[in-house]
Image (cartoon, rainbow, N blue to C red; front, side):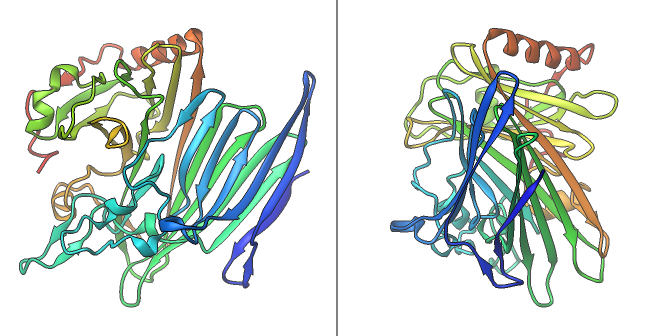
Length: 387
């Protein structure tokens, strides 16, 4: 039987300072204990950050309630899913100058494994004709706190679900509500993410959305590989062009090296289902991401390969648009309309692959998706995709 506990509800003045919920899921082969805990972090730039940790026995992850319900880090057995950001977070939004004059204040809080970018905008910063910042880098949603959070567990099925709501709104401005749901199961190596965006305004609007899924050491190291089926791919700029021959591989770090981005139109099943994967250097561990192209028609691979602790990271990024300036994406028809009162739903799934057999099975599936599609690699940025 399902049990639901409210952790935060600002509409009804509910706030849980701490929580330690423990249950046991009984299976024919034995009992699997699982746990949901909540606490507030203290000290430095993490002061005041509320976190919920879900330990499902095999898979565990930490959600930042104060930062758009992003996932700080995760672990599945001996597989760590995180990156060592120079900002050493998590960072409370009060210390993140989103509207810094250069438009890049967002980077001062960038520390998560899964970070949402949007909703008004999600690409590069954009300025008006007077040089005043109009849209900051990657938008506001990752630096807004959840206003309602609940956890639901079912000891009979082993299901664990954490839900939250985040408002991105202002007087005379846009009125978006983001609803987040994370679902996993005791003993599982799978995490399902289901988000929905609702336009609360009485007039039609439009939005952008991109997920920054960032994995670095100790999983992504020199020798790691990225596998994806695609119809078309291009380097975003000259830095990416220079490394085009190794776009799917990770090399030895170089101090101060530039970031590289590759933009994709992925291949998929007839119903839109597709999958990509990161494989570690030994080839015995993998992270698979599955989603539907009807939800996320565009995809970006981001790579920065400096010494670890500086920036050694891979970003796999499903999105509704490419991460360019909003006006450019609007011109290209990639800003998504959202009618008054309308809701759009999004879903993707992580599967941690352990062992050669699981990796071979996923790689075989991705190769099947590639099928007879040529997989065109453009030698230069595609003008309609890249500013």
